[in-house]
Length: 68
Image (tube, rainbow, N blue to C red; front, side):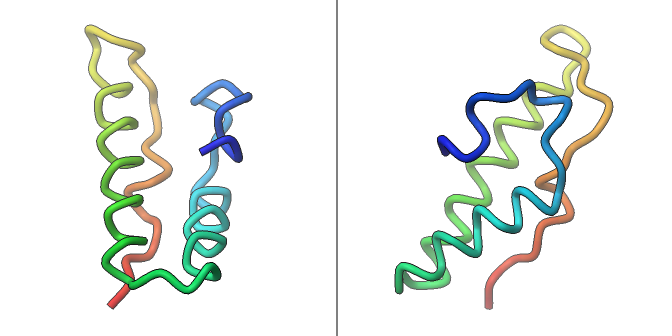
């Protein structure tokens, strides 16, 4: 997560989320593990999109590819 941690959430792109997931997959873990990381990132951005929290305008993890 340090790949995304030092920047404002508004600046994170779907490509960066895909790159992070690809780097996790390259360690040899199961696709389920990569999808669990994707779900965690999605939950974080979903929380950030709430008007009562940070009201982010985009959800970059939503369009990141799931592993089969």
